Image 1 (cartoon, rainbow, N blue to C red):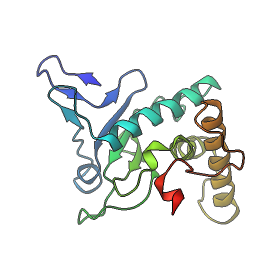
Image 2 (cartoon, one colour):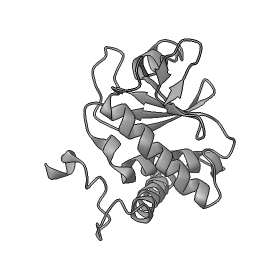
Image 3 (cartoon, rainbow, N blue to C red):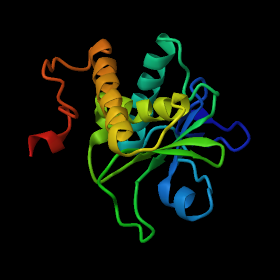
Image 4 (cartoon, helix red, strand yellow):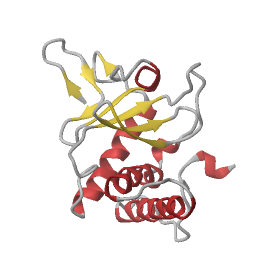
Length: 181
């Protein structure tokens, strides 16, 4: 967590990785307002936000180890917790949203447990990387399929190298309760 010494408040984030967790609705539907996830005592954190931060830091470290940092431009990362529509209805997905208001934005939902799945988080992180390096990034047809394939592959490699799976079939999200359905 990050502590504001002026107020004593703690915020959910990692300074070294330039990653913070914030409210999705405020950012998406209130003109990029950033309402950081906070705690007055640094003891009680929402598990979706905490797991999202942990796994995005792990994906960041995976790419840093192979010579790539975030989007290659050192843009800070914002994890938008409680992914929802304009009416606050939770959306059942995890996603890379793109670069907005000076942040690389990722969406994390309380409607699922994808935050606990490193392969899914690394998959989404890879979308940020491919979006940054592809000269033609129309997300459709062959380009969209290749983008998804690269993200699936990198997500699984990241998970395997982190020792977070014993899955030999490269199942996406096998640690999610969603995969048991």
